[in-house]
Length: 315
Length: 291
Image (cartoon, rainbow over all chains, first blue to last red):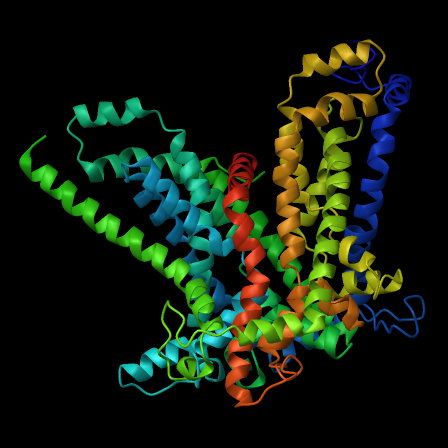
C-alpha cells in the first residue's frame, strides 16, 4: 500500500516519485496518446494563434519566414469598418438568448415539477428534448423551407390570414428574432433536465413542513424550490456569460446571406469568411484570438463574482 | 385545504396542462409537417394546404431521393465516420479519464488542468484548420475523426464515473500484482459499461450530426457525409441533380424533394431516439453535478 501511494501526504522526494512512476508505468503509457492529442490538436493551435496573430504569417512562406508585427492585426480589427457591427450582432444575439432562451428551461422545469402525474411528466420531457439532437443542418433546412416566401409554412399561414408574404431571411430586421426563437425551441427541454435533477434532490419533508407552517403554492416555489436550483442557475449563467462574445458560426453560415449581413454577421462567421474563404490567416486568427481572450476574461470574472456573491463557482 | 385554494390549484393545473400540450405540439409539429409534406403532391404544398396529413399522397419525392446515388454513398460515409470516430473517441477518453481518476497518478493536477484549459480558452478555428492541413489530413478520414477525438467535458464526465467505483476492488487486484492495464480492462471497464454507453452516445450523435469538418476538409464529394448532401440539396438548392426524370414543374417538385431529403436524414435519429434518450439524460445530470 505504501508503495501505491508513495507521494501522498509526504514530503516530495524524487526517489519515491520514481518508485511510484515505475510501479505505475502503465498509467503513464496509457496517458501518452492523450498528451499527444492535447498537444497537437489543442495546444499547438492555442500557441499558434498567438504566433500567427502577432505576425504577418503567410502559408507559403511558413512560420519562420514571417515577421513579428505585434498588435497591428488587433489595431486593424478595432478599426475594421465591420468591428462595431460584429460586436453589436454578437452581443445582441447573446443578450436576447440570455433574456429568453436562458430562463425558458427554468420556467419549464418549475412547471414540470408541478405536474402530479409522473407518466405525463416523463412523456412531456422526452418530447421536449428531442430538438436538442437534431443537427444544425436540419435546423437550418427547416428554417429555410418554413420561412420561404413562396412555399414556406409560415408564409402560407400569413397569406391564409390575409397578410403579405415576407422574405424573412432576406430582411435584416428578422434575424435576431429568428435566432432567439430557434434557441428557445431547441434548448428549452434539454436545459430543463439539469434543473429537474437539482429538484429531485430536495427533501420532501421540507415541503411538508412549509405547508404545515401555512405556506401557499407561491411560498413553496419561492422559499424551497427556487433556492434548491439557485446554485445550478448560477453555474449555468456563468457558463453562458463566458460565451457572451461567441455565437456559433455553424447555424449562422448556413442561413445568412449578404443581404442580411448587417444583422447576421457575427465574429465567428466573419472569422470563417476572412480565414477559410478568403485565406487571410493572420488577420482572422487575430480576430478569433480577440474573441477567445475576451471569453476567458469574462468567464474568470464571472466566476469570481459568483463565488463572492453565492459561494458557487464552476471551479 | 380550503375551497379557494383547491379552486386555484385546479385552475393552475388546467393552465399548466394546456401549456404542456402546446409545448409538445410546437416541438413535434415541424417534424410532422415535413413528414406530411414529403408525401404530398407539390401542388398542395405550394397552395399551403398541407397541415399534418399528406394531401395527394405520392412517393415520387422519395423515389427520386433514393434513386440519387449520392444519398446512399453519403449514408454509408456517415455510418462509417460515426462508428470509427466513436470508437476512437471512447478509447482515448477512457485512456484520459482512468489515469486522472487514480490518486497515485503523479502530475494528476497538472494533467487535469491540461484537460480543463481548452474548455475556457478555445484555440480558434483558423489555427486548428492550419494544423489539420499541415499534418496532411485534408481529404482523408482522419480529418473527420482526429481533431475532435477527445472532448474535455466527456473526460471529466468519465473521470467522475470512474471515481465512483469502489477503490477496494482494484486495490486488492493491485496487491495481487495486477497491472493498471489489467485493472482497467478487467475491473473498471466492465463495471462502467452504462457510463461508456452514455459518453459514446454523446460522441456518436455528434458525429452523425456533424457537417462543419466535412465542409472544411473534404474536397472529394464521394467522401461527403449525409449532412453535407442535405445542405447541398436543401440549403444550396441543388435539387436539379436529384431530379433525373421529371416531367412537370421542376421548381415545385424541388420543394417536395427537400422535404423528403430532410426526412431521410432525420429518420435515423428519430427512430433510435426513444431508446437512447435515457442515457443522455443520465449524462446531462452527471454533468450538472461536476459542472
